[in-house]
Amino acid sequence: MLSAKESIRTVIDSNNIKATYYAVYYDSFIKPDLFNKCVDVVFQECPCPRAFQWNILTHPAILPNACVDIDGVVCEDPSEEENDDGKNYIEFLNKAKPRLSIPNNVRISCFVTSRLEKYRKYTENWLKKYFDYGELVMLDLPSKEERLRLNAHASFKASVFSTRQELYFIESNLNQAIEIKNKTGKLVFCTENMMFV
Image 1 (cartoon, rainbow, N blue to C red):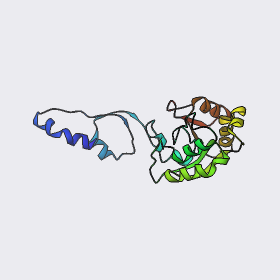
Image 2 (cartoon, one colour):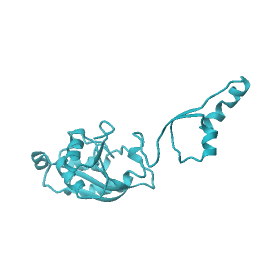
Image 3 (cartoon, helix red, strand yellow):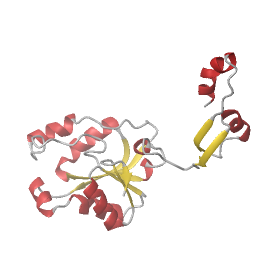
Image 4 (cartoon, one colour):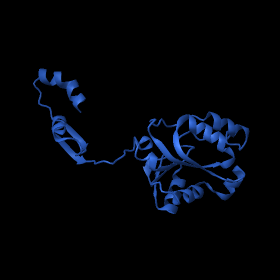
């Protein structure tokens, strides 16, 4: 706000304009003397701790307390051709493009993915390039076909999340996010609609 005020000060002073400065949200944590220099009118207090829709996926208080899905959250989803449970899938795992840029000082508590355990080394190699994290929990089934037959995606993630201390789960698929929430009763943030369910 101080920077914005400075950038228009010349115009205001030279034209003898009376300016009133508003803030929709404010934090009472700001020292009163600085607060009074910044704004004239405020509307709603938004105290800390807090996160906003635009920063929840990089927030230093959320990610250390979250279980995070991989595909669709921190990297792109594989295409149908790439998702062949074979050579194409391994190539995808090695070359997937990251979707998030997380600050270096933020550690993700745990990745929970329905990727199959047999792809652990590829998944770990990729994650280590881009993220600092505590644990990686993967689905231990023999094949993609078995995972699809059991419809194990959300139920697996929910079973892991329900036994952990993390406060949040970050999921890319809305149907899975709803199922995880319903099975655990814990907070789930969905990147498909950028909302908590």
